[in-house]
Image: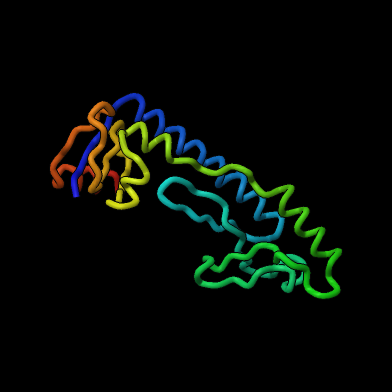
Length: 169
């Protein structure tokens, strides 16, 4: 692994945009999940985050047979079943319509942020990547080599760890 730090305006602006999108996604998802008396469950990968489903903590909204069964693999979340249970077509259509109409359309897109740091998600998929922000600097740990035009500075692992500790990560 190599370690890099970025404090260029482009990287910081892209970071701020991702944070703004993340905040908006979480707020919209919280409001959406509240419609069902649930909490939102998110999923993310290297380039995006999105609302995955809702998790019921107390009682299930409507009839439980209208929802997928929560599993450990789904973060114990549920969403309306694809097919209506026998004799529940009208209730199922109403639930699906509510879900589709109110579900947040926003997804957090990290691709622009990664490109601003001279990194490509395909490269990172193979080599791995971790990053965080501390102050006006974004730190990366990755096996990929950023494009030098992005303004990244290669640093020692000790500087990365010191910043990570100071940032509370």
